[in-house]
Image (cartoon, helix red, strand yellow):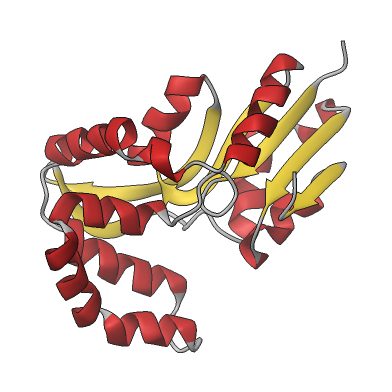
Amino acid sequence: MPQQIAFFFFFGTITTKDTLLELAKFHKGKASYLKGMLLLLPSLMGLKLGLTGSRQAKEKFLHYFFGGMHKQSFEDLCLKFTHKKLESLLRKEAMDKLNWHRQQDHEIVVVSASAKNWVAPFCQLHEWKYITTALEIKNDCITGNLSGENCNGAQKAIRIKEVFDIGLYEKIFAYGDSRGDKEMLALATDAFYRKF
């Protein structure tokens, strides 16, 4: 049987909200989360206006909400978030399409700029593969920095080609919803932008 594979972006495609923001809110509570967002407002506005790079803004956010947190405590938080919150953020149309691909016996891969720590537990529940951003760990603690490249934009396509020999697949499906997905969508024989 010819090999077929489906790549799904995470935030905006599978989920309705940004899981990094939701994880921070889950961790800190609404009041502390809002206080943090106010303090980070200059960085977030800089990102919106194109004055701050996405990596820089992301690392500032991670530093503020998770920097210095012990790795195991962070892993426990991410697992708890997966089981208690993530289900409510899932887009029904995406889950229906993911289930269709499973029924067709296609390989399924979630490709995300989000960190492995909370994407992996979710994907493992569904037996999907995943490609994600990694967080830097020093002295068993989250530093707030990324380890390696942010898995967004062109990096999505680069990382996919590092893991998979896409020439082996007769059909490559890709689902995305933002300009950061365009390089990933360009790899597909069947690309879906903001639709399923």
